[in-house]
Amino acid sequence: MIHAENLSVSYGDLRALADVDLDVADGEFVTVVGPSGCGKTTLLRTIGGLEEPTTGEVTVDGDPPAVAQSAARLGFVFQEHTLLPWKTAIENVTFLRRMAGKDADSAGARDLLATTGLDGFEDARPSELSGGMKQRVAIARAIHLGADVLLMDEPFGELDEITRDEMSVEILRLWRENRKTVVFVTHSVPEAVFLGDRCLVVAADTEGDPTADGAPGRVVAEFDVDLPRPRDESVFGSEAFGAQVARVRGALHGDT
Ligand SMILES: Nc1ncnc2c1ncn2[C@@H]1O[C@H](COP(=O)(O)OP(=O)(O)OP(=O)(O)O)[C@@H](O)[C@H]1O
Picture 1 (cartoon, rainbow, N blue to C red):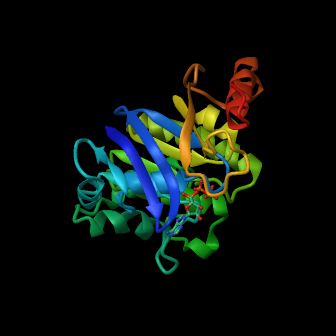
Picture 2: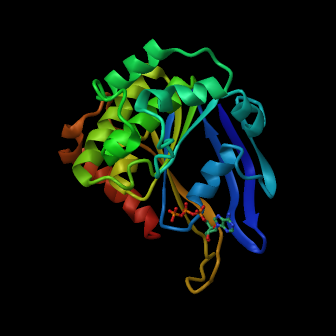
């Protein structure tokens, strides 16, 4: 579904990302974890057609990302909810779909809000919703759009830990029910392991020189997450989960 080859992105003289090869299968949930500033958002934005590769290429279902985006095949969920403050929850959910020229499906949007736990809040404006509720609306909006691919950038980054765990379980349920392909960026190793079929570790590659400044981000390790699905909160306490988290942390800290 997503194919990237030899992908590098620079902003002027700054090399943000280098030499990324990536294949994400239809329906796969891939997480991308790494420290701040290592190029995770850049990778996601490039897959989404919001940044142009400096070298290499990326395609979504065989098309350039800009084509996939204009056909509403890509849905974005960012750390900041990006809801329109003057529109109600239901209007926010249907808005992008209308903008994409698809028929308004208020009943479908209402159902989606209900399945994300927002029954009764359809007519509330963003200022009347908690952080978690706003992110639920943003997720419902991306699913309602009918996008095949969801690109999520730290969507739970602003939420408290308990809400974050709840939202993680929730997003897995929505993913299962709606059969989306997901690329999910996070700083949190446990979150990356809990959610992913596969977890990519991105880090600044200093090529052996730890004092090197401005090294570009690269995919330095990749893990298949060997935890059964469906997953719920009980996974967090399991030995297999702890061991997988430790492996990913090791890769982030440069262990081999
Ligand atoms: N539009 C831009 N113009 C110039 N430099 C940028 C731009 N966007 C990102 N950068 C730089 O590119 C590098 C990678 O940034 P990016 O946001 O992709 O990292 P990140 O891993 O997502 O960080 P964080 O986890 O803090 O969001 C950083 O050095 C950042 O300052």
